[in-house]
Image 1 (tube, rainbow, N blue to C red):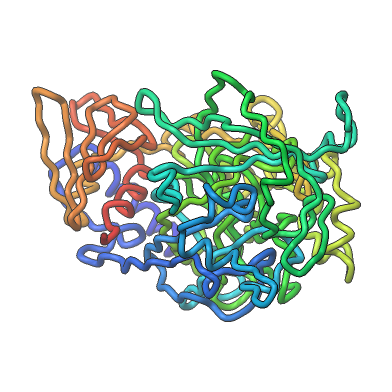
Image 2: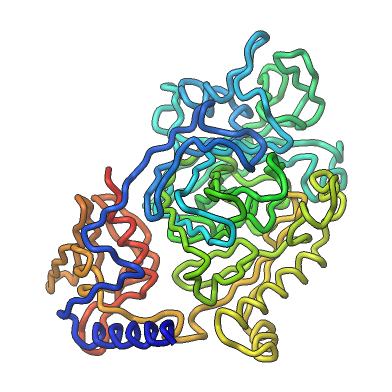
Length: 517
């Protein structure tokens, strides 16, 4: 009864806001007046990362719900071009340091990814849900003065790629590394291929020879490879920065291979996990223990040849804890990583919903032999049906029909052991229930932001905590502290000629404006 009353009051207040843009209310669920979250900075260095695994362990940072973390994430493929991706960068040099007498991050494996963290969240307990808003993502400039201001990435057609051993041209089992340079043209970021080379046997500082790419952190000796600089001429790949791997710790084991994704998140490799998106993870251990890594500059659905454009990125994330007792219908009993953005919900399914529990004591090796897109499709379909029934109050027959006529299912990846299928649910089909319009002025003023409006240019400026967001009515881009950004959605005028945005827009940009530089 109390929850029903709360929903009715909230709905009434929302209606008042829409009709009267100058009234003032405080929604305690989303807005805390005068309570600016703390901002933390988490560097990537040998003290703050785990290499190739996620799971339980001492946190490198502890935060409160609502805090914002600027987190550095470094690609494990930096060694593919030492000069462009490691040299001169103190943090990356520290992580990759490996000589005949000394090896930083010696405990590498059983996976490959460099994971920054874990980050503990005060009060997080099993049964809760952790929300992670991705507020910003920026390429990490390399540290080599010879290539000042540029960022590079590596794509590898690897032995775990889907078509390895089946190529038409000889040798069919080749592994090929392509180095990309990020550049800007016409205001848009692109990746341009610089050169490629075939992997040749590499000898690590311990004297072990690696005939294939089989161990993280091996630095390629470029005197042993032939660089081909005539590659992908005049092809520009749009940059889509995203985190390939974000994860809370699973409860089944202390150390878990970073490669196969599962219910706790991990190496999902969905390019939609990007700036403007929000991820939800089921908490399984005290503190949640969030890790972030495997940053990408570009990837298509499937990640077919083995990797994306693996690069290094610095991102701003806001971490919000949802307690079990207060979970809404969409998050109740959540047992998979769920993505939300302005227009969609994205459900992630896998060959095994929880391979650690389903495949026994050898699960971390067996999963690489057991993957199937058939199983992943069924898992994604069942999760999507359950989400529609639980979160959208549909009957099973309604949900099953709607899935067939509106939900787009796609292959997330076929290279990470536990293969992935995602289901994309459009918010638009549910109307105001999922994309409720809100008064921009009232929504932002109620937590203390200053709003100015320039009728001649149709420009709205929002200022809060030393940050400034300026956007023109109907535009898809804006400026944030003077830099151009893409908006999650354009600001629109309603029938009363008042600026209107969605509730998702409000919560996202409230968080972004709250970051303390």
